[in-house]
Image (cartoon, helix red, strand yellow):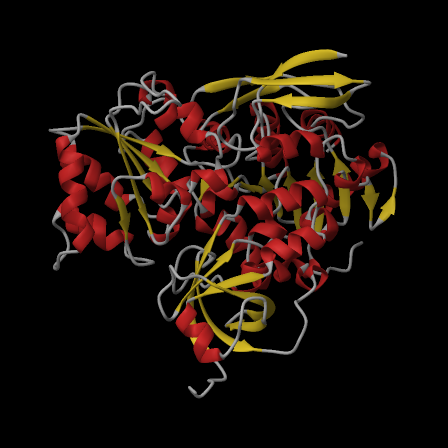
Length: 407
Length: 133
């Protein structure tokens, strides 16, 4: 029996206090992890949750599958690499190099979630801060369109409200105002004071009422503006509910941050669920000047036409390499049905709707459990992942390196 | 007794559910996933108008498709509002029409709800079928 410290890769929190005891290479005790984190770690030890290595549904060895992946990608006129939000930084670099070598496009789920927000942050239009700065310093924690008990179960206890040194489970609570803006009742809204309830799709109107751009007043806006104005350091935890309501446009948030810049320190932290979306966006930004949707066909170009969604909608991608992602579960089926004629190669540590739809499936090691590496947390801080047990599967890096070598 | 209506329009808000995530992590897209994901929460007033009770099946129909799920009352919801977990079920109803909205409409879906005697849509019917090479 042995004990290992682990960074959990079950969600974007990247909890770094996990202890796992293993016996005969199997976890027998997982300490400090939430239910989601524990299930994530256990999934890698459950053979039924791992995909088989297949070509056209027929089981094969990884060497044969990689050779078939090479053939499909090599024959493709318009290859597209998608995913990588849960891959290590080194796997992401290799995937970008592969897209460049293929003259194809590369994109991640950021293009239909946090991409524009991250671009605004990387471009300096939106102020950011680290989660370490939040603790004991921020006096207003504002969760907007975010539901951490369901998406990031330990976010409040490890990184925000309950992480303050004043917090004591016996009943002392930190002197910080916890506010949420939501369209429905949630666990978080029951502990927030105040919990601001808005109508679905009303987020932009609330922000524009705060910034004075709106023609009419929205009830919630005045009180919220007052709370922000009175605070010294407000951290806005921006959830997917807010991003979708804004149609991905961070402009209203940029204008709101500017409005308060003179009186309040305001910082934005995106509530990213994927363990390394931030890393992929930063790497691509360094490489191509854009955080998502980049094409390398004739030089480097970026734009909507290179996005996964648009290429699928227009049926322009003829071969898609999916790396550590599950778009067949995450996106509308009416869109994904357009991939009927494309060839799909899927690198995945777990069996998913995407591995079921793929022509070639190459099972890979689960980062943070079966292999190490580095990732960028939601606040941009680099986190080193440990390896609990080396599994039987190759790493994404090994498969991508091999493809780069033989293509 | 109030006259039952055959169908009502609702604005469905979808949200991530840790129970759906746990079911998928532990057992994949099996029975537990179906039980957690194939649910729509409606206002008590709408449940009454449709003359349905908790657990009764309803068919949700939107521009992109339809699914049969179980209905449950939620006193927090107003008439005409619904809530469902983000899953393969809600994604069957979601659409992506960039001329209308730049992102896929995964989070807010306009749908019609009608009582049905059909069984809950099997997860297998929600998987995109492709003829693999």
